[in-house]
Amino acid sequence: MCGNRLNSEENQTISQENWDLWYQDRFELGSPRQIELSGQGLANGLVELWARHLHETVQPTGLTGFAKFDMWWKDAFWPVLIFGDEEGQVKIRQWVYDERVAGPNYLDTADRSLLQMIAETHAQLLRNDLESDAIVSIASETESKTDFMAALNQMREGLES
Image (tube, rainbow, N blue to C red):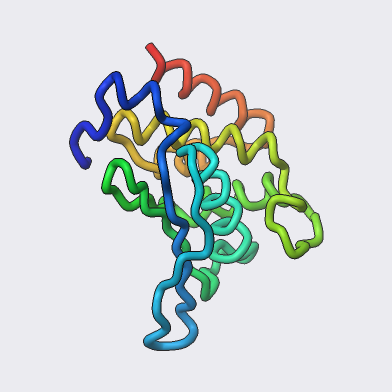
């Protein structure tokens, strides 16, 4: 855990928060990290992070790809990573991308409503000093996209209370 990162005033301005999305090629040894994208709004950054992580890092076979992504949440001075068991990550990848053919923009081929739900849940987890593995665990425990979405909604309701 990282300690309480947001007070109630900061929580109200979460859509204004700045982030950088970092990329690193793990195939090329010594390849430097580089900023791939910058923006505002924690959930917006998390949509971008999850889209890239699921498409490039998580492979359908369960292997890890050569691309590594993480986000620097500037206002909280905190790195945001996606982690959790492989089975859950592969399921989420399948549900977000189905059998879609990848295009130049990760978001064009993704289930945007599911990505948004995942990102908003991840943002709530971060505000409660929790991490992405809670989302991945839910995926591991559910059998369908519909069940996963219902479980995410239930988690979000619990975090709000």
